[in-house]
Length: 451
Image 1 (cartoon, helix red, strand yellow):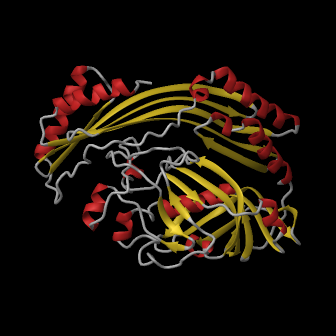
Image 2 (cartoon, rainbow, N blue to C red):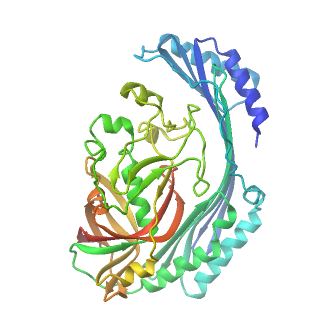
Image 3 (cartoon, rainbow, N blue to C red):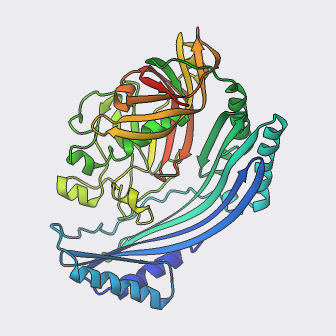
């Protein structure tokens, strides 16, 4: 890690070099260690160190951006000159910079030394135990175990500076069993909250139970979803539906639903970058502090998330959801977006949700989901890694994977119960943390069978 003092010194140097009317920058640092395994054997162990400096400059209302991953004085001067030059020749914007003013940010301690101290040998040993357990059952385990520490700093020419460091561990595995498969994943900033051995056993048991599936004719059915499937609901609702820009453009499921009850009263969804139950980040890439922000409260749609630009256009305040320039461009175009989503749990176990179902399906997770109608968040996709028929409140056996086309908004309006068991996961695509419970939904639209 660079540490707060060194990052602050870098930020001060870059801002002092920038010959522009206003400037803001983001500095990110990351140390990642990744162990991958394939067919019950570790096949890759890699470490990645990365530092990036992203600078945005304004000359009048013109804007320019530049970035570098080199920290020499020459490189920092160059990135400052490039950003200012781009601003001089860039197009005019209707809004002034409106930088976040200096303010004291509430620190969030989310650094677990056990994450940064974990050795490759310890990580490989944890993976070995999963692989050996799978091999004993004649199965094959595949997956990845990631640990990383990230630093993020946001600063601007008004004198504002914010610094945050967070650790994160993520383990995910798929276990294959003669055509059947099981899945497990968990993420957390605390290493002890990612129990690799028990996650492996979870996937192994699912793969065992999913063997020899029967064909089931598709029809609307009650479904009990594991947190893995529920997480897909939250992510699909988020991209781009929870963006205030998408709402203003009329291309979000939130559009024309604000203040209305659109989901079951049991459903509450919010974003909170300060919650230690997620992967905290107390401010966004513009330095704006985060706080708990309701998206849906007891079924009523409350609103969307803002960055500085969307807030200025709509006469609102930024909610602290500008994405860092480190996000992939194909995601950053959807900014602002939530990055720490939570769904309120209920008071029943997943087993109780199953026992209360006369006929339906227990579904582990969804795969290859794609949004086909953003205004209602209609999604098409398929089940994966364990689907089981429920009859008379009991699991009767596995069934082959099924396709579905379903409005996620409509489905969440048909929630009959929510489970008490919550799983935290970081999505590989959106890089967002999602805390999701199991849920029971009636009349889920299953439309076809997969091969």
